[in-house]
Image (cartoon, rainbow, N blue to C red):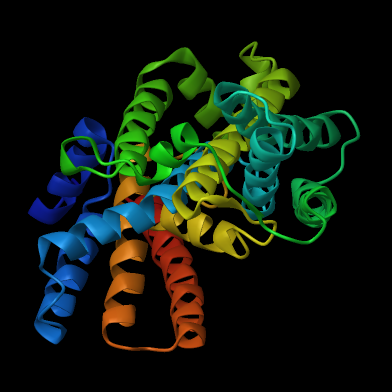
Length: 330
């Protein structure tokens, strides 16, 4: 008896088209719309233009960190040091601008360079010392935070020059400058991940390191570049945060890595590598931003917000793995 071929459902075809054409998971977009609708019904202030800009502004720092997490996780790695490296980078930039009195452009370079160096150390230890990424980046979490406290002597560094403050507080055409930087960074990262050989190699590493090695990819070299890129993006996030609050705060970015990883996974990045989407990550970051903003408008206390983020992370991983198992049975 000839077996009948099972045709995919309309929803499955739409899902597949959204991934192939736009590199996003349709479920993430549905969750964002549903969450926004719920918050709009619960709070009359949610749909205001000022609140919308506040969500984008608050999402800008997390969004940049989430892009970093997307590249690392998509390659089958993990970076738990993102928040601490962000804090270290902000302090390094503020120290150069305020304590040393160097030009603003050098302070900006110091932020990104400090992050890139920390990321490169992570990559070197993972690929040359063969220490698991979990241990390396967990150690860097403590090292970067401690170094930030040492450099700043445990105090925030205030009095940044106006050129740096503009990066965090400027509003060209009424749009917050951090939002503009996030959008430009996301576009560039999306092009790199979705349409370049570097992006294909990154996902190949996450899919199967052995197969990537057999295909001629320089696995260790490529992984070091990914971790360096992750650190540089964390440095950029540190610059945005420092410029926005007009201070290099050594405690900045605590637990931000949790939110960034959650945003990436919600957006469709596979926790075990091989699949990632920058556009999906931006949707995930917006989901986290809408969730935190809505809970704040509803006067929900901060520790309950942390519980909500943790619950969303567990749910996102569950849904992702359910989808993987479902696709493997097709």
